[in-house]
View 1 (cartoon, rainbow, N blue to C red):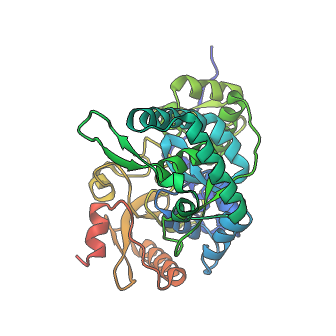
View 2 (view 1 turned 60 degrees about the vertical axis):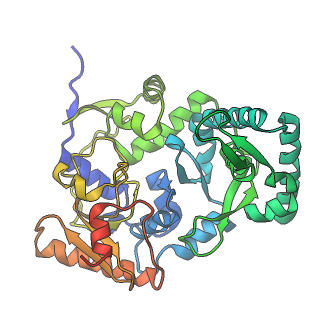
View 3 (view 1 turned 30 degrees about the horizontal axis):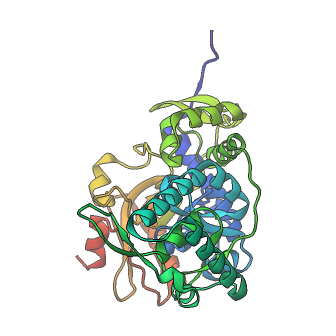
Length: 393
């Protein structure tokens, strides 16, 4: 007979989420490194989400802007790069070798092959010409420290070269080399996004060279990333992990086996936790949070019914499945928040949660408004209810 799996209820999963994702009051972090390490990866498709996600999890009212900018652009303890599912994330820098080896490297190889193929089809440029262009670009970045794409194009005229993209298709047309080459080099880990042009909400970044980093084996990299993810998000199903990483199911299973992950029983079926992480978790004190578009907690699992009522989904997601800004109460999504053009932070609950919840959520809205100040944040992907709120409807 096999060992009986311990059941872990949705209530206990929400208790784990509250503490491990730094959302309950007593679990909030004192610095940005604690938050980034606890969450493993911060969605950075919308740059503002990184700051809003960290700000929601810090104790105190100062906000995360100065500390995050120092970690990202001065100390380089955090790195913005492509990761799971071809998406831009901010990772702890010490995790980037595992992310690159397990996730980004294969995609970068395909992206470079497609770039070379398109150059051959749509121009007179070849791989030797491309390699020389990359050498000149690296020299320029080494001399400058960091530079925008436009600055690099002015200094290295080859970057302004055009090629015909989609030869023989309905999408055929001239394309510039610079943005695509910079993207490929970023995915290869040779360059990285640096300080933006403008405020912390800007998505126009400067580029900088990256230092050499360790190159772990595929197996070690997969296991390292899964270890950190289970510490943050376990228990979770194989389907959750496959969705979050974007890996093949065989890679997921090998990593779970290498870690000796323990099986537990969830409402969705078999779940996994790290070895010796099956002990019951006490219920934290009541807590509220206002989390941003694509927040790591809202996006942490593929199967979300244990924290999102399916009836709420039409109000929370855009047509592509991106979850917008959310209001949380005790481990569940209970509403939506938005910022209006005059800067006011407003929210709407999808059910009556009672006076205690109302007061706690209002306090979080006030705290958020305090550190955002005069900055205006418009989510890159907008859910239906967020649009209504922002427009004053």
